[in-house]
Image (cartoon, rainbow, N blue to C red; front, side, top):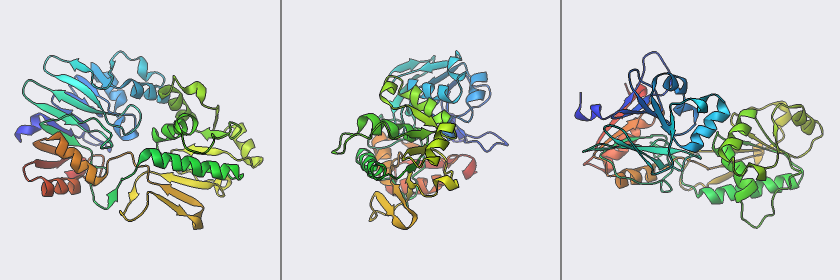
Length: 357
């Protein structure tokens, strides 16, 4: 066993397809391992919360950001009431008997965090899902690194705020012309888009009339109201997908905006203008917004992960001497390890997790 194995690793459980726990000395992030006492949750996406029930049964302490805990409450109202939770704002110290734990801003989705552990003589960092250069940088000796954008063929360069504003203007143009829109995205980004449309947008276009219904599934509405609890009174009432009210909107052919996290395509939505968000096979000569007139759709590069170039800059800024890429959540971990080896010959790099075994 290598010297660093005792400090950082991607620890997979037998006979499960769930992503693995990230070991930072005594802290186990986004997963579960028996006989451990301290856990941490980086954010509320599905591939990072698969073991929440196990964590609550066995960990004494689970550290997360307050926004993440509120979002988990939108998924299961019982979770936030368990006594194991310790909520920390970014940068706050949580001391244990042998280390200091901090959450650092990751800028992936609301509440997302990097997890930093400092012992007497070493510092350890789990990047979680992050968006450089908008995340907080803190140096560490050992780094466990997300590998979502681990291959040069997949890039995520985008000015997120300007792309969100362009999306808003696109949506407003369509609904003003009497056309409905369906936006396919992921949890967290869905809530961010709604907030941008209702509160943040500061471009030349006027605000969308509250006569235009917004529609989403029940769980996503609950998450929205939890993570933006202080601002929810500024949101229009959101209609539940599959409710009688929603089907009446469809029957009456009334313009609306539907927000979905899964790519449901029912016949009633076939003529809607469709917007897809997130990363895609992205060549630098392509724009961050691609219109597909032949399919009545548009793809917005609203990637919430760092591009491969920015991942490498992040590694350089962290100044780690050992980097472990997480292959349990990405099949690009080995490719990312190679990219790091080519650029930084002084860093020891390993790909770990169930997909690299």
